[in-house]
Each structure stands twice: as structure tokens, then as C-alpha cells.
Length: 259
Figure 1 (cartoon, one colour):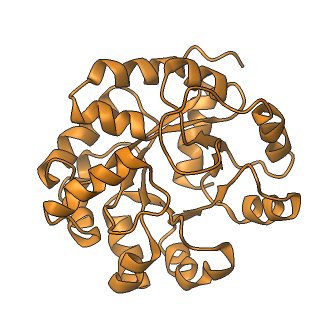
Figure 2 (figure 1 turned 90 degrees about the vertical axis):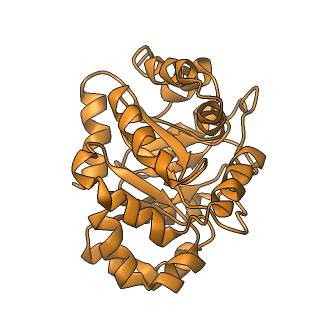
């Protein structure tokens, strides 16, 4: 069992749901990364998804896209993020998941990237613009370092596609709860519960719900259907405003989910 899977299952064994906040590395300057990660750990998150700024973020909504552009203005790159994480690796107590695009990894070199990612505390990778059929480009290098390659499953995926993606996904399955890009939304589609039941028939790997989750009520609703939730745009916005009370309320909601 991978470190990432074990962390999620440990939370579930305690009767709670996993909570994974997404942060944009370097939004506000790279020096913000350490205090942000350490405080998130302190309030009880399960893992942390660290976004790498990219010039063409096809999966990101306005909030995360703008955070990425702010980070790019500070000169933040994949290499500088990994170096910064490595500088306080001994203080990191939860698994980190890097969300990046394929070109930065290829420019870095798959083997070098995998080694540096592992040394920085990265236990999982999400590459939204890399089709499953092309994952061998980096999967071997990640496997050598025991870094999970996480797959996203959309609401429109066919049963055949779901079978392939869930079989390939390591660490957890990232279940996209809306059609489209990231960002807060007011409601979720009625068929979500059936979708999650279907996903669970394909895999024993933990299934985390992500995209559009922005309130404690969303956390409870989606958490009841899954192993836990990933919250992105709401976290990025709250961090921009130094609104830790909202973040703590989201994390607390995972402890009141009806099983």
C-alpha cells in the first residue's frame, strides 16, 4: 500500500473523511509555501495538493489560473518549488501531491523529476493534460521512486474508460464532480451519488471527490459518497484573504460526515 493510500485509509478507519486542500505554490511568493503547508498540517488535513504554476493551465478555473499567473510573476517554476519543499522536508508530516502539466516534467527530465519530487515529500502526481495512453512517458520513473500516478475520472467517462482509469490510478482515484474546469459551484448534479456507487464497483482504491467543492455542506454531501474531498478554488481564495477560519470549517466538516 502506498503512503498516500495509507494516509487516506487511516483517516477513514478513525471514522472521518479525507480532506485534501489544493494550494498554488508561490502565490504571494515562494516564501509562503512553508508556513502554508505547516499550518494546513496543524489543522488536520490528510494530504496537500501542491499546484505548480503553468502558462497554459487547461484544467484550471479563474481563481486558480490567476493564482498561477501571480506565482509565475514571482519566477516560480517546478524546479524552484521542489527545491523549496526539499528545504523543509523534515517538517512535512502529510503526503504531498503535485499537480502539474506534462511539458514541465519533460523539460525537467522524467527520472530527475521523480527523484527530486520524492526527495521533496511528493507521494503522488496529477498530470491533467496527459492521456492514460501516454502515461508510460513518466510512469516508469515515478514507479522507481514509489511516487503514485493519480488518474482523473470524469462524469462523462464511459464504463470502459472508467475501468481503465480506475485500474491504473495509484494513491487514490480523483473523481471529477462537475463537467468543466475547477471553481466553486452552488449545486451538484443529481446523478452524482449513482456515479460514485458505480466507481466503487471498479476499484478498492480510495475515491476522492474534487472540483466545485466550496462549502462545509458540499464537503459533507460529497464526503458521504466517497473517501473524502479535494478543495481547490475555495482554499486558494481563502489563503489570498488570509481567511483561515473558512479553511478550518471545511476541514472540520469531514469529521461530521454521515457514513
